[in-house]
Structures are given as C-alpha cells and as structure tokens.
Image 1 (tube, rainbow, N blue to C red):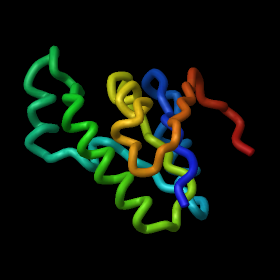
Image 2 (cartoon, rainbow, N blue to C red):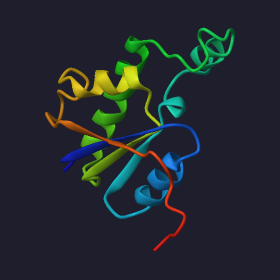
Image 3 (cartoon, rainbow, N blue to C red):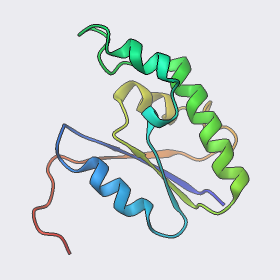
Image 4 (cartoon, rainbow, N blue to C red):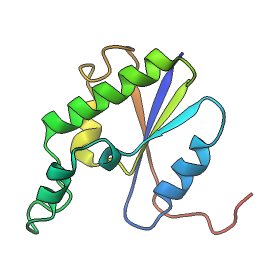
Length: 120
C-alpha cells in the first residue's frame, strides 16, 4: 500500500537523480520521473524557445501524475514514491489533493542544496 510520496527538488548537479535512483532500487519504492510520462510531442515543444525550456503545463503534469499514482496503487507493491527532479509548479500541483485523491496522502518535499561528497 502506498503511504508516502517525496518530491526531491533542488538546483542542478546536487545529486537529485542519483539519490532518487538509489532509493528507488530498494524494496517497496518507486521513482517517478515526469519526463518519462509525458508525450514526446509535449517534450519537444518545451525545447522550442528559451521561455518554454523545460516547462510542462499543469494539466499534462496532473494527468501524468494521476495515471502513474493510480498504477502504483493498483499494483500494491510500493509503499513509497520518489518524485525525481520535480519542477516547482508540479510540486504545488501534487501537494494539492486532486492528483493524489486516489490514495489521499500528503506529499512531502525534500530540497537538496549540495551533494554529500562522502557516501556511506
């Protein structure tokens, strides 16, 4: 049963993807990478200008999230989902109850400011 979701955010090159991919390998954990759940046509449109670079509209984000979370809940094997390198506007979207209504959990947010140079 899914009981927690954690958005990992922060500036470039602090280890967001490295951390989420390592945590996602543990039993009962999954990683959601927004760009893997958005149609290629929308991703291509984000690269058409500097103003749109990396920007994905809220409706697309919400639909991708709802579909992914519903599939994780239906599968029943994950208790934690990590949102990798999630954009700020999307973080506000998942913090509301609408995309997460199917499992009614709050999303916590962890900001990485620098990567630890020593790994344990």
